[in-house]
Length: 545
Image (cartoon, rainbow, N blue to C red; front, side, top):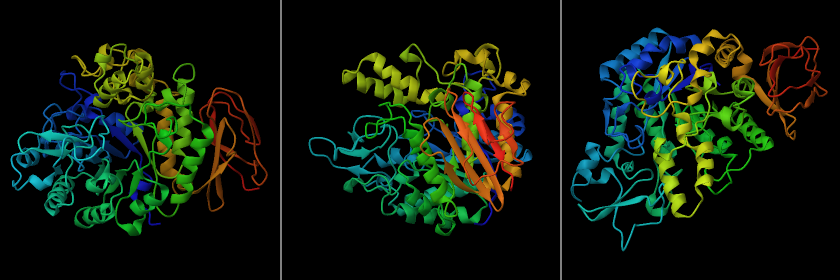
């Protein structure tokens, strides 16, 4: 496999609305990001994935775009965006932007034209259908309710897989794709270094056949994007592909396919859900399942594609609250989870606040929630007769606002995020958990993440080594090895608060073993036999005899 700059890179996702507010209006903005670039440089990250900053009426927090060529007023100006790209570049940090081409806002000029008449030149930019006594089909929106909205103006329904204010584009129209290619080139010429492609596995949909993901023209459209746009630049792309399997991930990411560089798999993130019942139906995580899924992606993509590694993003709850322990062992468990992920093969993604161990939020009042998906599911479940307490348990665990509370910069009012009224309430634990404290404490989660980021830059085995799972059936510990040439790394992690034993199996030598990183200061120098402590994680470089 040819070596690429993004193989050794670590990506940091910024959700601008919640990152840092420079002007006191309660909303994070682009000048605020610029102010904090030195902090990100200190962490050592190479790439910022910037969630949408385009013009938008904000029905879905910027994922409903009304102008691909404009910047949302709340976030700043195009000049601010250009300065961010330049200031980041000065610190050897690249910017990748969210690419949202499955849908636009209903306030986009294309849709405003499209809905005027059936013979409007933009009519076929979107998906319009007749319906007899109701919607054209029973396809449901991801955000609850039917995926069809009746429009009085022309007496037809338009298709929206998300909010009714997010009509789906018709990428089977050549002109739509040409416009999207033009827009992508515009941003790459501005100096960005690639795209995170929102729900990209939907762009080949065939709604009349009930095909939503992995439509027959999906891969041809991605190849076309690569040919017309991406191949002209030295960029990095990652596709959000909830439907991806390891087989389809190879189609997306194998270098000879000329499509994407990597994809986000969702398989591991749904292991605490009752399969087939959606994200709100909860079940306890079984570690053996998690090990099997992550190991499958590690082994099957090795040499044939590329993994993205993540626990958190703007759509996922805080991992330390879900699969760690956000109380007594918050620091230990956050470091353990980071160790397990960052020692794997792939490009790691850190979501803002993860590096200081930010936790989930439990708002007492439903009115404090802002996420459209959360508010819709509460309404739907209430109408179905589900008790309030049961709905709130799911929201506390899986709601997207868990990730969207403002970054906790210090212990001052509103955690130093804003001098105004924040758009969403700050987590009340900001006095204990904040950047200022983390920077001052050499044992903090931040400094541990900083070390993990650096290790990837200096140890080729972390980047390119083969992966092998050990102790696949153990209920408490996650153990694997990485091998490259004659070098071997052993990763041992206690996933829970118990004290299990680990014994190095035959075939591995503990002679001259060295600790590469550990979340305890006094982990055993030899991995021959370890009495693991709660959430202990240690990485060894094994001797050769």
